[in-house]
Image 1: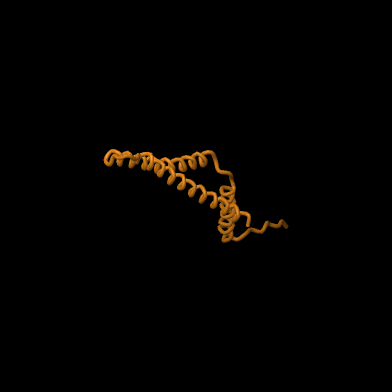
Image 2: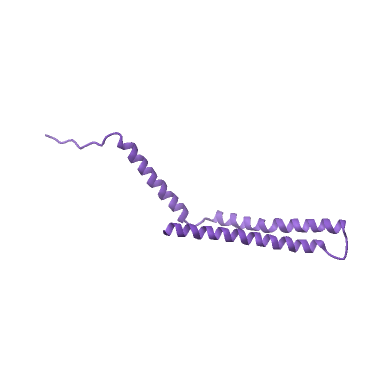
Length: 113
């Protein structure tokens, strides 16, 4: 007599498949989180930081030019507001980079736990 291999019931096949898909999805998500950011991420971050500094600086210069044309006096509003816009832009960029750095460290701590 030959023995036939035991077959699993058909109801467990979908459960096994869903479990296997879940394991693979979790592995893929973990690999994405723990992987080093690519070149495009770095370029995008530099662009974001650059624009967060450039936009307030240019807005300050434009407002200063407008004030100098309409309310001329002994002071240069252009230079003062250019420096003010640059300061606001640098603070904005510092805040953004600090927030991203904190987020990266938090993800690393969550992965380690």
